[in-house]
Length: 277
Image (cartoon, rainbow, N blue to C red):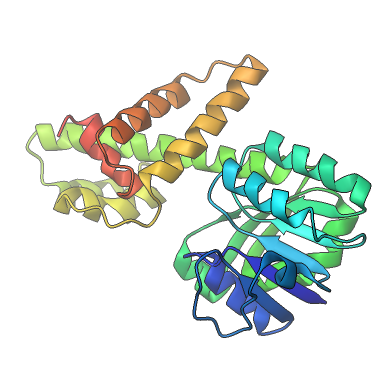
């Protein structure tokens, strides 16, 4: 199969590179990149004669803008895979627009960070028609170690949003309790070690405690991205009429973080919001 990959950012470039090791791939981005595979000069060149078109963009508006261009060039029988984290409703809308054209769409957002993208060990959540998923499964395996089919259009994005909402809640709990330990005058390095002896140990405590202790927040996943995702989760809860108090607290924390200009810092920088630093 011939593949196009559109959106060669911090995650997209290594993902595309791994696909190019096994498949004929051409890439495209609005910013010219140095790539180990051919780089298209336009959207038209990118999608022409390609069996599969993969996209990876930041937000709903970018997805909609991208497909407003791709509609001009897509042909019957092509399969589109969008790996962005966007609203499930946006994904379903694009899928409906592609259907009369005979073009299939999968939503396949990813979890884990850039090192996993480089290694081809991402987690991938798949939404769309299961038969279409199986047609492109070998391409997805170039990028991901853990791939799970979640259901119809939008289900991949629903799962990704729930995943990140839980991550936001866990990090918020870490922020609150480490802030309390700091107020007690405890050594935070000892606190983290002590937590590891029991059930309070968790991935985000282990991974983000150094940021908090040093007061430095190099970005692995930004406040802005987490703010987007927890707001998506709140929209889902509101649509269901379901009260999720911890989620609402987290949404407020991220709104304050954005107001404070922390949007480009790692999401663990919300420690400063939670603890008024």
